[in-house]
Image (cartoon, rainbow, N blue to C red; front, top):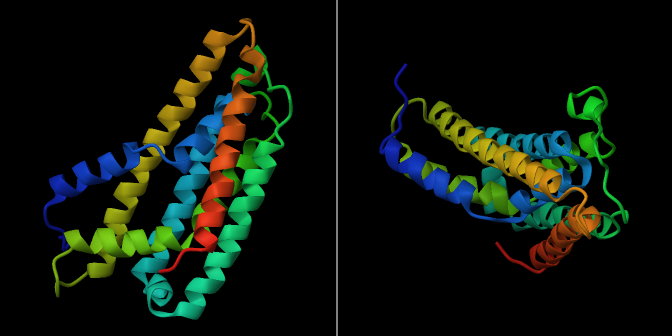
Length: 218
């Protein structure tokens, strides 16, 4: 089955550059991995990807276009998303004064570190409740779809899936790298607070993004 997609290499290159650009999602994943371990960071990356896939699916069926066309719908989602971003940010700012140090059994996956599943859902909801993510996909993906061609919704889904898979791969790499850095710092003076301060930095960023979203327009 042929998709109505053009300039696929250009799309893949642009998507990679966007996904490699440091942002709140990447810092959130790094903070989760630094505080709760590699598993938590990977789950946070998967949560971010799940939120993106929700926007792709909604945009493909036309629901996200409602956010772009309706000021009321955009405002409702915007305020809910802003409140959630601030709440997540405050929660991260109140991080504990110690990090979860995984044992050999935990590293092997015998027990999920505290905060692992929470990181997944936080990552998913921070994306799902951000209308700017929906508008990004509505603006970015159609540029690589042939106008008037059949199967445009399927083409939109395929491009959105490719974009999201690339983003998840990048964020998983960030989680693994952060975990290795934490292991390399283990035992050094002040290393126990590395993850906490990284998570607090992410928390401050999320609070700022929530406030920025609250006072933004379409």
